[in-house]
Image 1 (cartoon, each protein chain N blue to C red):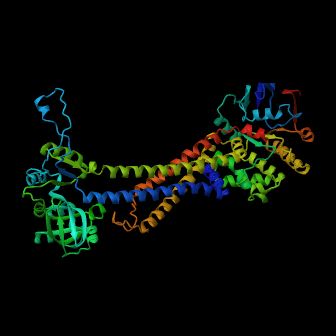
Image 2: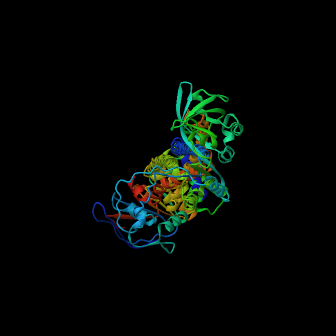
Image 3: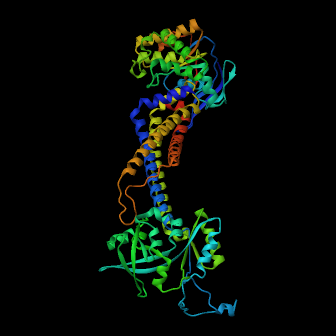
Length: 415
Length: 220
């Protein structure tokens, strides 16, 4: 009713500083929430994307550390068998018929691409410098299809691998440490002691130090040469799916069909994902705490206001205002504080987010970042205003109800 | 108004009967004074008659309607329409102007549009001789002026009954006389019923009827 609104309005405007303080609590809480969530999500999304684009959805390989069932189980099934201290056999890491398997997997409509790969630990030598790293033998075109390698090239072209048999596309970190540029020749040594000269035909940067500082790409044939293996020797197959959320199920499928270990990206990046979840939990916890504190502030202020207005409430009731009218007057004040405070909070949050996105931040070698990534999803703003109004409504409700139930006689008699 | 067998008890600090078997009739257009020594229960009786206090035994009727046992919200609405109060301490809402204070009960009743209410409020203020104070913040008025605004507020919905708890208690003799004259005019010219609790003997002597109380009982 209009009378209720006008009384509430007069109350709020009569004590502008007090109303403002209550509002600022909500504003601050929501502003920080929006800024923090935007920053956290920005960071999470950025690192997730980097990790995702440079790692396969499903990684197929032969896991020699997986516990093997002892052969005695086949001889005496169901009986109590005890094998003491089994030692691993010197098993080959080869995936049999790897190219055929990759071809079969490619035929699945859910699959974007399947790239066979042969990798090995190696030493990179350039003059006196010797670095530990790994080399990935790949079909460069298939690899480009999966990981968009061509867009990550800092120097040279991926086609260089096709024209130069002993070509090498090197990670930017590696190249920097070895002081190499396109055209240089680097000596690569395998753990078995085989040495080979490779020519740098390109330099890539994925953005993750983990990769850029250790990895190089070469033709599969080159790496087979280094390892002294035949042309059919492949140790890994990398698969990218159309929908990466199918990875877990598909991995199980592939493992059961082909028998080799198929690891989906979720399992492989479990720690990273857990980290993201924890960061989210922290962000929301801090924000909710801020809002609860703001809520307490409002509860306090409303309580004080109502206490100082006991006489007025008694008069209103004496002149005919019902309990719910009085409750309405104070709830209105609470909600106005909530809504105005929240809207100001959203604006503050946006300004903070924007300033953060301009802040320079050097990720150094670990990650390629020169400013803080901030996510401006409108969802956060919606959550912000809902939180803000809900908190003030709850905080204001109890004092308002109390005001409604004030007995005018007690007040008047008490004067 | 009629009451039958009203008894009331206070429970703190211990059970104490403050009103004993009150039976009284008040006629329309009467100017009635309620007198007695301090603590005899006259204010208590008045708040009971005003429907603000519902904790009593017995029955209360106003204009033929029984009000005993009705809900608080119903009584609030009843008061809004039919009863006007003047307290000893004027109790105006300090953040509002004199005019706004007078208008508020009528805005709550909601029977007339705001412009009409404003006009009527000005009329009441004129009746009390303080139109020049209409737009002033009520907290800035003198005691006598505030009391007159309070009376105007009590009148805004043209209630059947006006009740005053020591309406001149806080006023000097000039202002007391002004208030008394206004009350007299209201009963005589406008036919309103007024019940006032008072310590002022002159006030009581000049009203139509006086009811004296002692120790919770009516004695005359």
